[in-house]
Length: 259
Image 1: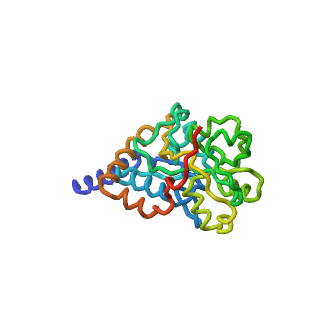
Image 2 (image 1 turned 90 degrees about the horizontal axis):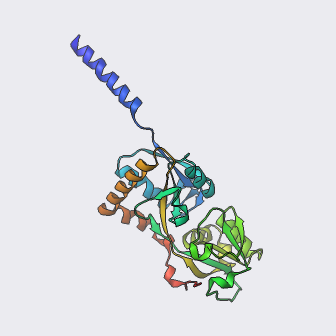
Image 3 (image 1 turned 180 degrees about the vertical axis):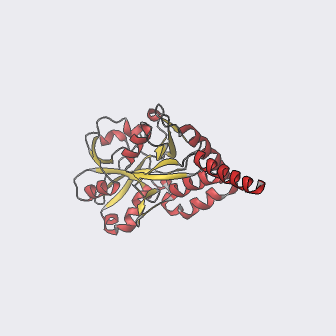
């Protein structure tokens, strides 16, 4: 009888522990920023996806991803519906609503793109004044570009749409990350014959952003930062990055725009 009671007690304890276990932390992932984060070949994948998964796993923290367009992802994190969202340039204007990962996921150059036959070499941001420049909704492109009020920004839902507008001469320029554009060239080779890289407008560090309003935001940051440090010290971070290295590109090949 005592053994039976002990067995029943153990079962009840196990059930209670499961009931009291914290639910998985919900992290928002961008849907269309492959090779970093996006739905590609019908599944969520990319460098950032692997890094975020591995960092939380290293701190034994259960998570689940919810996939959204970037602007929607950041909005839901801002109002506390998601514990976090990635990838984000750690812009000071966002710090009121978000805390950023202690270390960046990686650094990636943003380039100005122009028509293949356009021989102009843009050297200064001021040269973009009154020009039509395709941008992706919700993206940050660094203060030097974002603070240029006289640029005629043409918002698009995806980098691909902006680059196609450029190829069709519906805008004068487009801005897009080098890595995402290289991936688009692989899937749309004709596009690579229609547009070319101009100069670097920014080379930001990309972070996982944590909501200041979500009840799990603070603990999510703590667990992620601990796991990410483990990735770095174990060498797993370097192994993951190496698999995606061809998309990180070499921004040093291109001139940097100045004010």
